[in-house]
Length: 292
Image (tube, rainbow, N blue to C red; front, top):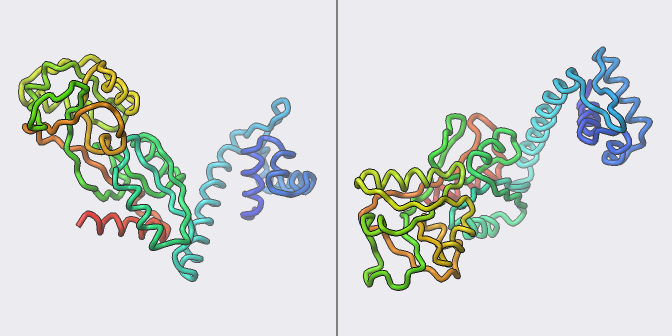
């Protein structure tokens, strides 16, 4: 059994048809069928069973699939590392960003691109918990996530903290552009509740500390819809600074919450004890420099 056979096996497992796998591999069907037959003979097991027009993995096939996927990914990482050592900084930066992503990110990526023009990018958006899972699955290398999140298996570089703002469509609430939690208490609030952000409970805790009972009329997991609801007068909200910077153009007013110490925290994470591409290493260095 060699790496080429494993790649053939993975292609068949993913395509679920010899013909489709052969097309994907740019080879004829008979040689691919022969390679599968040789692999099954060597292992002494059937790796697939016929289900109508498609092939399904047997229990033995599913076990081999898990190992084959890891082996081929590890080999690709080894090849990438060796190549980068000899040819300088090239390759791809694969990074995930959460729903309320770190607002300086576009500027940082532009700066990084100017320094390393030969790097390409894979940027994937998802919730923080899902991004952490994608790192473990080696779909992406880095992720910018919102804290709090259980991160025992990850290295963490905390980014700048952001204050929260009270946002409403009520015109000219006051002249000093700040409010207190007590004055917010009487407003109908619709709060962000995106999974993995922890913002909803953090805001509630701020009111609890002040022994206040906010008038919460709802939650919204989509920030764009949340801002539209606020702009329409449906309710007011409390959001971190990033939301205001990313979602402009709404007919709303934002006020600093003068008696709140709550902040929204972001971090960049990557898997512990795992090789990082030179591109990922350099991007972490850039972020660390920005935090100084």
